[in-house]
Every structure is written in structure tokens, then in C-alpha cells.
Image 1 (cartoon, rainbow, N blue to C red):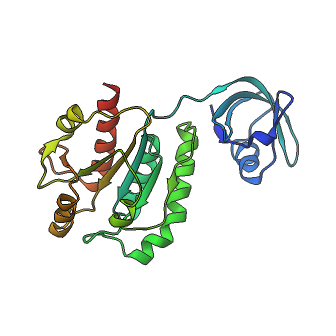
Image 2: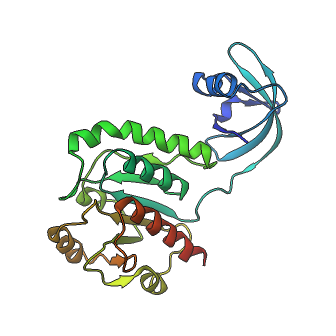
Length: 243
């Protein structure tokens, strides 16, 4: 069932009016929806509405609310990703999969071995945010995650987190299972995951992590591409929490 974001102010008398251009064009023009068809809508309060299209005019769509409830499509903890941007489609994949895996926001970080120049990364932020928005609709996310401005590891660490996990392919101290068995994730905690570029972090960056007493965690003996490491790392964290 198609899923779209709306504002609660559009909900009145057991009906919802869709008049913003983006949603209207997508539903009425791209999908060519008909009266009686079902669509899912969700507002900024994470209330999800199962609706039936009641009327379609030249500039708005009116839906009847069949059922409404608080969306449960969210993690029980806040997951953040600080990641060194990759070229082209690989970065788009990361933004899409991070959204599907429940990340609250992504921090594109410039690292010593970053494959993308800073000015190029800055110019891509708007596109990356759009990818996260579209992925949120596809996987029925309750909240749209944020792609933050391009930054550095130092600046990201100025924020407060309950746990910080650095994934590295070398110089690792322990596995994720070992780390989380000693430091289990609790409900509502803020967890920051840091993942480097293709080629990994530099020795200078590894030394920085060690000086900050940040755990450097292994994803196993295999050497993973950066976009694969993001998917595996985030997925393993969710698995260990739910397990």
C-alpha cells in the first residue's frame, strides 16, 4: 500500500485532504489512483492512517480514514551514523539502507582517505536527503531521518552519545558481540556508529580513536566494501539488541 507523509492540520472530521503539489502529483498523476483505492498516510506525530480515497479533484485528494494508530515502525533506541562519503551510487545505497535500518540521522564526515572532495560532498547533501525521504516512504518509516551537513569526526563527537562504536577492518580490539555483551544497548540510548571510507581509516585516525578511548570493533575476518560494512554493522547492532 503506498505510503505518504502529511501534516496533522490536514486531518479533519475523519478525513484527510491532500493538496500539496508533491503528494498530489505522485498519487493522482504518477500512480493514477482511483476513488476507493487504499493509501497509507502518516503525520508528524507518528500517527499512521489507513485511508480510502473518497474524492479527487484538479488540485486535491480527499481520503476517508478507515483506521488510525501510533506507528511502531521505529527502533527503541536512537541510532546515528557518521560515515565517510563514497562515490556515486555507493553513497546513495548507504543513504537508502541506513534509512531502512532505522538510523535517526547520518553525518557525512571528511576523513583522510575520503574518496569524495569536500565541495562535492557538500553539493550532494540535498540529494542524499531526498533519497532518505523516498526510502522512508517505501519502508513506512514513522520519522524521516536527517542527512546532516558535511562535518568532521571531531565535530560529531561534540554531541552526547551513550555509546560510540567505531568499525574498522584492522587494528580491532573485539567483536561487536563481545562489546555489546559487556555494554548492552538500553532502550532510548543514543548510539553513534562511525565507519570509514574505502581503504579504511588512516593510522592517524586510529590513534585519535584510541586517545579518545573509543572501542574499535571488528565485523569479522572478511574485508568488506564500505557500503557493505554500513549495512552489516547497523544490521548486527539491531540484531544484538533484539536478541
